[in-house]
Amino acid sequence: MRDRTCPSSSEGLHNFAVWRRYLAEVAPLLFRKGEKAITLCQPVTVKRTTQGDDGTEETDAFTRFVYRPHWFVLAQTEGAELPLVPIPAWDRAKALESLNVSEVPFDACDGNVSGAAL
Image (tube, rainbow, N blue to C red):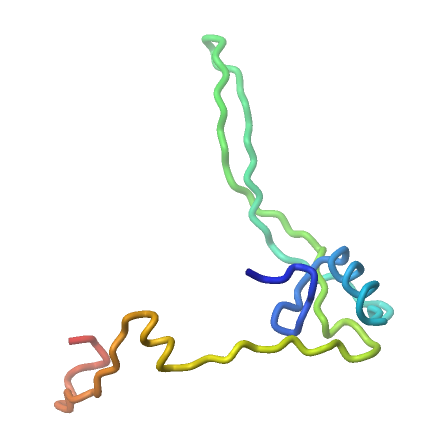
């Protein structure tokens, strides 16, 4: 689960409200003058109720896309350095074991495999 209150370089895309709340509590960072919000295309589910010819109500749901300029990244700020968020350690053996995957050496050397699994 991600910590929604702490923007970091790996999760540095947030709306202005999140940045304002975080920057007020932790670091005296400011957005550089003239910085504009990044525009993203976002899906929006719309429900519409229509009246049928026989008097019944029909509800339709569909998805449309809207462009919203609400997003800022850490690179658009200036000021003191943010505290680094620790990156959790990754262990190859532990990952393979938890996924129940065994590593097998490649031994099909005839040249006709083309990267396909046997």
